[in-house]
Image (cartoon, rainbow, N blue to C red; front, side):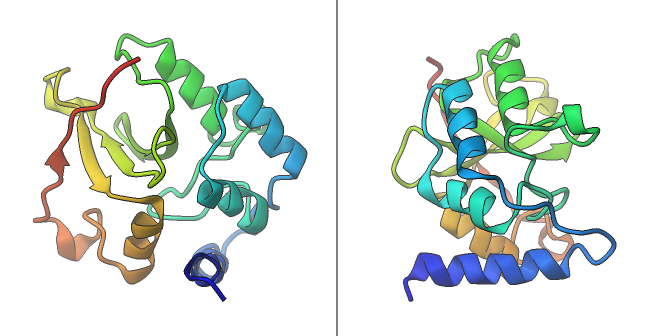
Length: 174
């Protein structure tokens, strides 16, 4: 078993135990993934695709969990990844192409996967500091590391880790 397979197994187990009040959404189909990628105009990283197609169409992960991939508000729930990306690309923030909001933290903050690089680093978009030039922070060098941090309970968002600071980063807008 590969490290990614082991990680997916751990995520699936955690997803099932963190939603006892509700059922985990069914995994997204291959056609839903293809439609989402067509709407986005770029492929999502393989690990992110596997989360959606093998575990569930959102609803699991840190805090509020992953957003649904394609069908969000239309089903009465959270907006989808595709909807959020389109909205952010059309906003005044100069949202970078290929930086995909995957999870909403509240107060306008998002965990985002940078789909432009092999590592699929996870960035925090935090617009509440008042400085539009300093809204991006490096949350994790890869999506795999970000998931492991969630599974291990060592993320910056954990109550015991509220003194952790994330490093600001420059995200080039395209």
